[in-house]
Image (cartoon, rainbow, N blue to C red; front, side, top):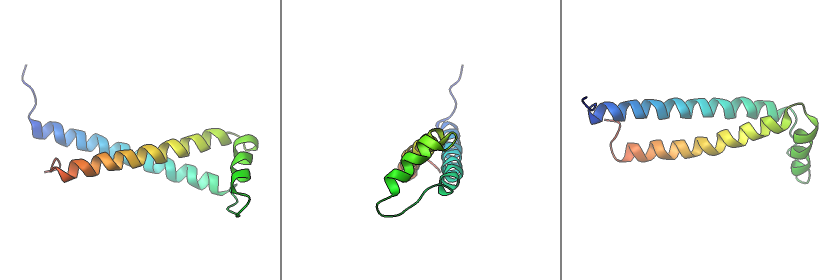
Length: 91
């Protein structure tokens, strides 16, 4: 069995990473819009606002969790994609 050429593997990896980044960005955007309906960015009220979202809004804890996960993972995937671009893997 032949192994695929290195360039093909790099292109496929780049495509998969790009799809992951796009999906996580969309999840963060959609959950951010949902959170914006209930979030109050007042100086002394922001933490209380997040607690109210988590405890009183239907599926609020799930929405907060998805938003946090998507944002953290999205930053990590962007970093991996940027590092790959630095070494010329996208050529």
